Structures are given as C-alpha cells and as structure tokens.
Length: 262
Image (cartoon, rainbow, N blue to C red; front, top):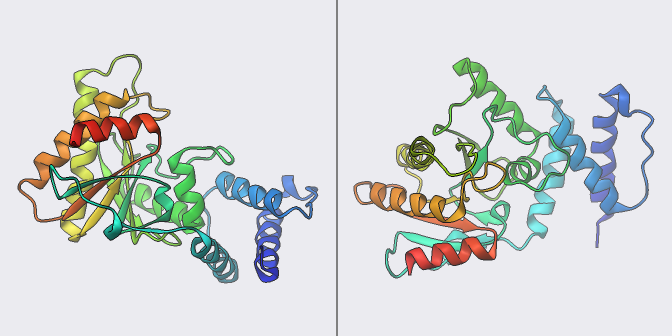
C-alpha cells in the first residue's frame, strides 16, 4: 500500500521535472500510482545531467530510500560461496537490491546511463534506483578525463540511494558476430579494471553483472568463461576483494555459471 506522503513526494518530483522542460508542461497526470511512477522513471532517464536544487534532492532521496526499504533486499554475506572456490559465489537476483560494498554496472562509453525511457537494461535500472546525482557524478568524471570511457576501463562512483555503497562502471566491447581476440581481451580487461579498483579501495565484496552479454551481443558462454577465468586468476594473487559474486539474470546465465563453478 502506498503511503500518502510517498505519493505526495512522487507528485512533487514529477512537477519539478516537468516544469524544467517546457515541452512537457502540457502533460496531464493521472491518479494511478504505477503510471505516475513509470513517468517519473522516464523523466529521470531522459534528463540531461544538470544541477539540482537541495529540496529536490532531499525529496528524491527520501522517496528512493523508501522504495529501497520496501524491496526484498539481499545481503551479500547471506549468499553461499562456491565449493570449488570460496572466494566466488553465484546469485540470481536484482542487483539494485543487493547489500554489498560495490556492484558493477555495464555502462556505455559516456557513463551517463541509458537515456531510453524505462529501458530494461542494467544501466537504466541502476541509474533509476540510484538517483539523478549519479548521472551528474559520471559527467564530472568524463569531463575531468576529457574523453569518453574506453572499452575495458572502469570508474567508481557512490551508490547514492542503492543498498550498495559504490558502483563500478565499466564499458564492455560491442560484438558483431563471433567475438574477436581483441573483443575477448577487452572483456577480460573490464573484469581486471573493476577488480583493481576494488583492491585499491579494499572492498570486501563486489558483484559483477554479465558484462557485454545484453545489447552488446557478447555470447553468454564465452563471456562467462572469460569472467570466471579472469576473476579467478586475479584473486589468486590479491587480498581484495575478498569475495566476488557473479550476479546472473536469466536461467541460461545461471546454468552456465553453475556448470563452470561446480
């Protein structure tokens, strides 16, 4: 059941985002909560990075924090390790509901998140749950380095309204047909770059999504083999992260990883 104050917060956030863009000022709002919530996500997804006033941020954070509390969160410490390697684990679930030091986002080269309204990709889901501050921080990181993020590299940001403390953003290779040797090297570099950040920050646990296997078209089995081999090799000579969780989303991905780690 939706609390009245939460619905009032939702309407405030919609009003703010609509009024700052003249093309949406004639938009009519319904009384249906789910429709309004989808509209908020769409407006957040399509908003270019720009400063936000403190009142908006306070209400947005309160709203998203309440949504986070209403989710069924999973603690990384409750996910059992693999018998073959106690520093590895497999988990199938919503990465935005995982309580952990850091989650890995399969980002695009701008690092700004997905601008397609309510798109069903991990980049969109993470930015939508974290809040608009995430897009602003990512823009600052790109502006500071003076160019878009190269495939195989990674950057770390705050997790904002996620239960994860940090988000590590990495850009995987885009594949057309069978992955080339360079594609495979770049994918391995994504994992190593994220692990290097985790080691530098001394993060105890991080969770990887299946990098490049969505709209970037990397074959799932090949990608999983690279992920497991790269992470296993890295952990063999590194103290941090102490444990890595492979977060899978589909039945097929879960089966592939369980076969590799059984």
